[in-house]
Amino acid sequence: MSTGSAPPTRDELARQLRDARARTLQLVSGLSDEQLMGPRLAIVNPLRWEVGHVGWFQESWALRHLWSEPPSRRDGDSLYDSSRVAHDTRWDLPLPTMAETLEFARGVLERILHRIATHEPDGKAAYFYRLALFHEDMHDEAFTYTRQTLGYPEPRLAAAAPPPDEAGPLPGDVEVPGGTHLLGGTRDSPFVFDNEKWAHGVTVAPFRIARAPVTNAEFAEFVEAGGYRAERFWTPGGWRWRASVAAERPVYWEQAPGGGFVWRRYDRVVPLAPHAPVIHVNAFEADGYCRWAGRRLPTEAEWELAATGPAEVGRKRPFPWGDEPPTSEHANLDGRWGGCVDVAALPAGDSAFGCRQMIGNVWEWTASRFLPYPGFVADPYKDYSEPWFATPHRVLRGGCWATRGRLLRNTWRNFYEPHRRDVLGGFRTCAP
Image (cartoon, rainbow, N blue to C red; front, side, top):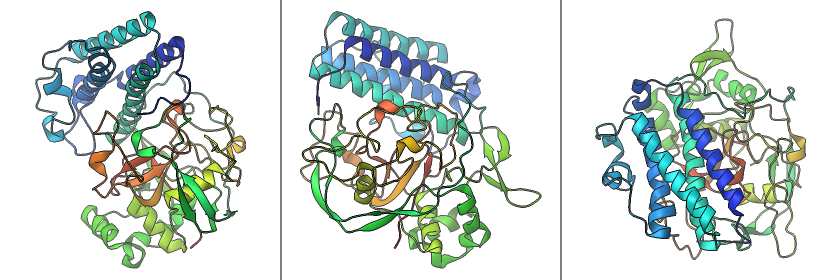
């Protein structure tokens, strides 16, 4: 557990918790009871269950653990504890109605807000309030890609605004010098998860990394060249996956009648933006493209070095552009534009080495497995990281257009199984 620098104020915590809940409500609104349960799939949760889980998690850590308050539902643990309730049983549970679920989550939030209003949060309390907040933020991203997976209508987000003017592609590499790099979170960070702890020296050889993520137009060349049918471009595991699902192109792409591709975006088929980053591709597809193009994925150490820039004495940049938290000038985050923007947009967010959009727009697969850093010790929420170190999960970095900006920093590690292409993942490449 890390409380970092001075904890946020009461008003900041309360505002952010209310903001997260407003986003949750936007993401589950406009759906029928049938849609709120959805089909039984290994890659999604029933949305009605997931909303209850968000409320249960907040109560568990920010009220029961922190303040020893009793649970508000006697059956809460048996319904919503994701460590105890097997995924494929969540459709069979005696779940409350959606109205009852929302009322449960609302009541939990009001109790947390009352605690914040009546007790000035110290470092420990602020940690658990932010843990509850960030957990809801992560599920809000999951609600977003679940709606895409299931072909539901596009959510109506209050933050949505017209995207920036089309900016086009951004070809080319930047040179990153080698040396010893501090990989991981530093002790002065306001908040870090256990898998970011702690910054430690790693040796990185000089490398060249793309200025921008791979675009739809670039990935389409791989598809049209028969890349999905050529085993030589795939790892053995990737080729087995490709054969098992008969993949011929990214999951939501369709061949357009006049040539080229369109894609299913929520419940509509729309043109493929050529200079937006390819999204909804998995690590196997990213590896396949790299082999075809004579490139490779960066390691997470290379990615973090390219994002952080040259080391400064005694400190690391929290963001590619410096110390200032993300704004609409720096990054495509918070659902602000409702989807990806062109890879050349937002030059104010460039890293010191000249890499663009390393925060936001699209998550970026790396070549690295999700493993603990030296001296790893689990935080109180032990199931966040530790159970997944012995699995094939791969690290992704940087966040995407739907990620909340308050979650992100250069050291933040996301992780998914390499076959997952429902998530909002893309990639950038390195020279071999």
